[in-house]
Image (cartoon, rainbow, N blue to C red; front, side, top):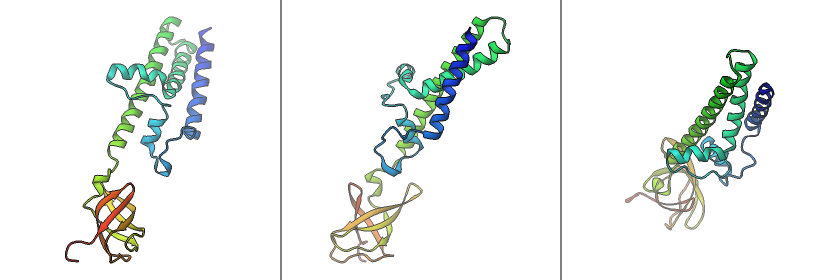
Length: 195
């Protein structure tokens, strides 16, 4: 009788896992536009599960994660099918306990790994303060009050940002510009002193 439960759990978990691979988290609006990366996708895939405050709270909040249930069902079913279906253990109870343990371990472990990835990824994102004091090359020329584009290197990554200036003399393509402030996503730039 348990073999049907294992088969159902493995089938449902497998379909959910395949669906998550091909569809991903497109049904969850991340509000991040085209810049969403694997870390933020992992964070939003848990469908609103709050931050875990401590290890014990993290264990319980994982039960509200769709990712937990996908991995729990798939590995619970697979373990039960292998152990009970192939008669590798003497008792169906031992197979059930092992399947439950494997499902819980895999589900909790997967949620913990994805949360860790999302925290480490978001902690490395550049803040407005990281732009200030950086110099870059003007890609699209602009004058006072106009918008242009400046290419900077931040944390080892080349980034193009919109730029404006308060100086009377504008910037032409190829000139060097220094970021003196950030207004949302637009850099306010100036020339180096004496230039």
